[in-house]
Amino acid sequence: MPDCGIETVPPQVMALRAEMRVRGLDAFILPRYDAHQGEYVAPHDERLRYVTGFSGSAGMAIVTMEEVAMFVDGRYSVQVREECVGAVFSFHHLFEEPPEDWLSERAGDWWCVGFDPMHLPPSWYDRFAGALAETGVQLAAQNDNPVDFIWDEQPPSPMGQVSAMPLQFAGKTASEKVAELTAFMAQQGAQFHVETQPDNIAWCLNVRGEDVPFLPIPQSFMLVADTGAVTWFVEPEKLPDDLVASLPERISVVPPHGFLPSIRASVKTGQRVLVDPEFSPVAVCLALEKIGAKIERRTSYLTHLKALKNAVELEGMRVCHIQDGVAVTEFSAWLAETVPARAASGDPVRESEAEAQVNAFREASGSYLSESFNTISAAGGNAAMCHYATTETRDAAILPEAPYLLDSGGQYETGTTDITRSFAFGQRPEGYDQAYTAVFKAFYALATLKFPRGTQGHHIDAICRRPLWDLGLDYDHGTGHGIGHRLSVHEHPQRIGKPVSAVDLMPGMVMSIEPGHYVAGLYGIRIENLFEIVEEDNGFFGFRNLTWAPIMTEMLDFEALTAAEIAWLDSYHQEMEAKLGPFLSERALSWCQINAARGQGAAIG
Image (tube, rainbow, N blue to C red; front, side, top):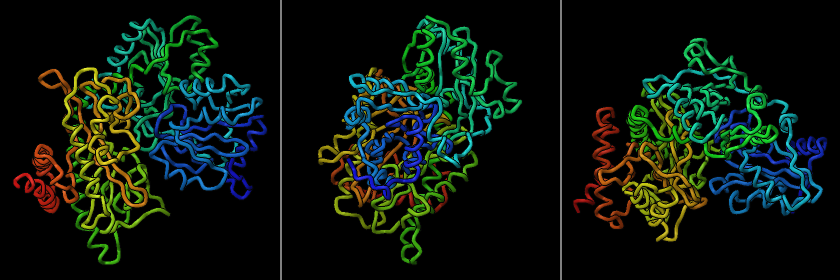
């Protein structure tokens, strides 16, 4: 148990403990989630950050009267220790030391543990309930969140305007999508489908919004009946009159506070209701249990439909990746020229300036809307933090003697992008080139893989990691994730990683491939492209590249590459030049040709 002297306890933690005492709580479970269980939340819902200081996109705290236990995955193991300062904090791996096990070991039999049922999904609730089943600990749902009681300057709930996603970009009407969902409900014998994931709702209704940074969705809930009637729980003030008029007749709009009351009023005892156990609030299941409904817990069918991009959506993704590729290539040429020159003049480029510059190049496209996530512009040792972000007090210089990593993406009118490139400017730390070469070999191994129907992400993860494992190296993050169509940059359900992902990889899905390697305090390396999954002539599946931007060749050890790897790299750069060349400046095109020439020379040699 840490020494929790009063001087080490942040005032927000002290205030929360005081509110917990008023409520008779011995502990409070505080996840990063809002009521929609997504990755990105509005400032109004940054409760974990307000109490603890942790700004990562995934994590959980358990606040007791003695300590604040922080649970994060490997992406945030460095960051959480930098942001959560004081002996009151203890740090744990979200998967290797699960929070429910930690709590069951520390809780006294008399403890009352509070949680917000709108912020905890059923799967997490079951984990805590199971771990505490043999104890006398009581899990106590709170009708209102105690953090809101202590947050004096809490930002207001978001009220971003909702806009239509034109059919020319969506490819299917909202009525067609609802019909697909109700057909599935009929197959399952379900009378209702509860949807609480805003990106699923936005996709289904062909709308987009401005409620959450990086994710162009309106926060809302939805209840779909087997009759085809849809109740959309969204603030009416967000909806322009012309959008309301364009909605299909069977869609009715109700304010969000009517969500749970409508479920109680609509669902009858014995009726079957589809609920996603990972991405819905357990409050839904608790309400349905009181009604006596039959709860069918399964991944939302809309999640599945959304992941399988139609032909129009895929074409939109291809278009925006050309635009994004031009921007990233112009940035890469600017960076290679500017970093050494500015360092020599004593006015080095800083991480925040590089971040602003790549987005300025994106804005020049004319169809760029916003970043798709918080850009990771990381010099030297900062790149060892997988989800590093610059701040007013944390903004390092990019210098020739230290490598640099940029992971960024954009929301465009026709789709979403995500790309990572690693850079060096002549001088590299010992071991960097070997690791960079291994990361490229890992990237190539998966990018060129052909696999049979029924393959799931965890089946092929080791194929990507093998070149790194051969050197005793690895990375503590996933190998690939799904990408939305002008929606979430991290889209479910498809994943490539070590954990089991019981989702078949199917044509129409868009995936990232992004192996990496990280050395704390020195550097981080990652190469990331997006790919369509396509069916090959022989019935196997493969990856078709979407991302076009130079892969840095200066750091590659070509003697460690096979002829096939060098030929693929050469072909990639040739196709990239053909696609982007007409839109590039002379400076960027010349720089691309110099970068590609290293690979061509190795192939000739």
